[in-house]
Length: 306
Image 1 (cartoon, one colour):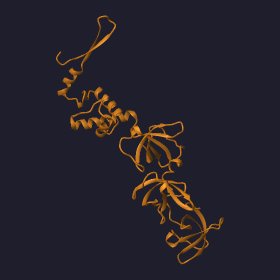
Image 2 (cartoon, one colour):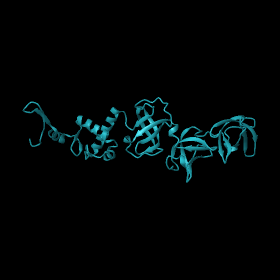
Image 3 (spheres, one colour):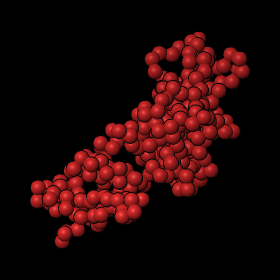
Image 4 (cartoon, one colour):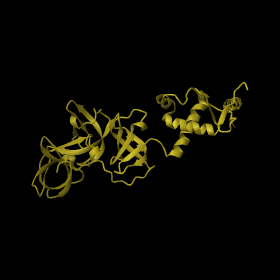
């Protein structure tokens, strides 16, 4: 009954608290006075949360943040060579064995943990979170969600617990900033796989995202006037400037060019103004005509000295 709520009988009062007994198993637990919420008298049958310490059972009337079988975000309060401890809101902290850590934990940070019992001891694990998530959900493509990073694989991407309950995955191609276990992210449902696991993205729905990306580029260009970026610029450099993928960048500048808002040079982009508009029109003007044999179409580009 460790780590769960249990209906117990109050059978004895002592100078330090009360002795409680389980009617079925006849196991006993001790309730200290400082763990009482409300009133308790001998003869009462009440519900208590049960935990252990030094192989003895104790009870509390305080409400814990998590019980056995839960997946909850909990704060790390202590780290030792052999493991760590997290708070579940009662006087007794919960042990995290080092083998149950997804990575080294840091005091003061919160992570998702799965609560379980090992050898009559309440324990927590962030390695076990993934296998205890479910695919029974009602999400749809384009739904916005909140997710917690539970595992990072550099070759694949990040495994996400959606609403601390459901399987989610963020492919490495969607990740540009460093993320780590414990990070909380705002994401969108990109795809729901046949096995009901959910693929995620940082981006908004395609039409909206294109508009967002185009506005981002225009905002930055309005301050700089001209930027030395182009089709062959490294994706890392594009992300540093615009916080978007190279693919999104190319789609956005294509839209801005069609809207006659920017000029795309071989080595840069710039906002179109009345001063560079005529120059751009000449440099980019072209025309087509048939070849002498009438079988081919030849495209000619306007040259500045023509």
